[in-house]
Length: 524
Ligand code: HEM
Image (cartoon, rainbow, N blue to C red; front, side, top):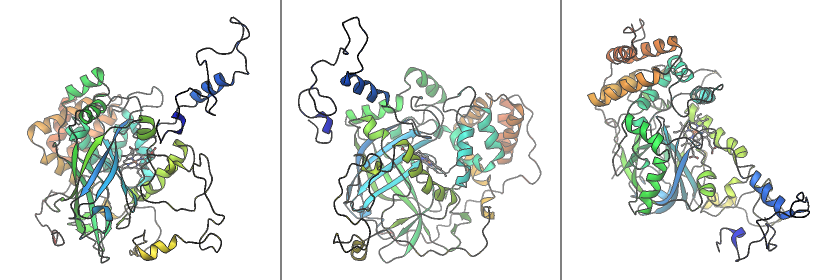
């Protein structure tokens, strides 16, 4: 008998209304060889429920695996962030869901793709979701392009192939025309695109967040997960073979490790940058999600450790029904004006309204906050609560008590009075978003020769699957702008002449300044 499963009480089989059933193997018929009778309610209930068992898969990140665990804070973040779960020694239950981005729910684990790394912290101040990826930058700068990049990356609409691979015309058409995508893509083409295990992946919040200290001081931060097992990847041959031999390789690896007591763990770290008025750090626009801040410039400061402890008891109820949202923030952590993050704030609840069938999905067991909830949301499909009182509005003089008082006495969500730049409404990006190629060049330059070989082989393999040679040539030319040798090697691998970078296209010289600014200042 499970307290969380009211439909699994007692030791007798019943209908959903609790009426005992004697025979669930034979439908009611007019004579053993006669037609089935419509009056067989048990039959109809069983079949009807089955007919509606499936919910839509996620529009992205459909394929995933999840686990429960605990996050223990070191307290090192408290000088910059007042979130209670980051205070020294505080232990917070978490649920983590790892995923691929493009494949459908039944696709293979080891494909070349970005991986999702989403963490739900059930803190005493409410739920905080860190909805990140295993690559520190994203494809696009403005969320208005998200449907476009996903349409380009998903299987072609006519044949529904390929599944979760970047080896096709629309993907490379998009990447070669929208050059901001080159940085994320070169990470995809590196060994990072084929992780050995979820347990050996880094995770990144990608966007810059704003954190608030106890005294109200704000800082700009980027979140990082560092796996205690280190970062490891498959070779392309291993990934290909495993895709056939064991398409559940990552899922199995996670659950087997948990079952064996080899508990995977990650250290959470923060890069902390001053909340400067221009939101630039060493020339990098912190609102541009296609740019990272090199760790040499802003070291990742460890703030706590996540340990995964057990897999789901029921995959559907936990891994499928979990609903992450970048807007699930706790006091002390806020968003920035990153235009990708701003769009995400709208998208997650919107999609979950469809995927989880109405507005009450935060009442599902996996999504229920561990903090007390006292909201004024009422009714709607699948409402589980039997609310009391008559006055779901504040202030009121009928129900007594007023949750708004909590805000006055303790930490609460706050609207930071951050400055809004003066200017005119415009459909445009800041000029600082225009450099798309310095950072992919920096990434390429940071790889050792074996890693560079893998990147070249990956581009050749993936571009080799394109049918349209104009797209292939355009992408090879872009690679030559990132780095002449990279472009030439990929072109040679594809049997094309070495591309000539177009005048004016060249990326600026990569200058790695050791300046650490005033970092560490506030760290003990
Ligand atoms: C899932 C939208 C960018 C990480 C999703 C889902 C949507 C979505 C609609 C499905 C959610 C669900 O069904 O519950 C968007 C939009 C983006 C964007 C509109 C840009 C404007 C990003 C970025 C990251 C990211 C930059 C990483 C930093 C994830 C992850 C999931 C997800 C990890 C899976 C969550 C889970 O495991 O349930 N996204 N996304 N997304 N997204 Fe995004």
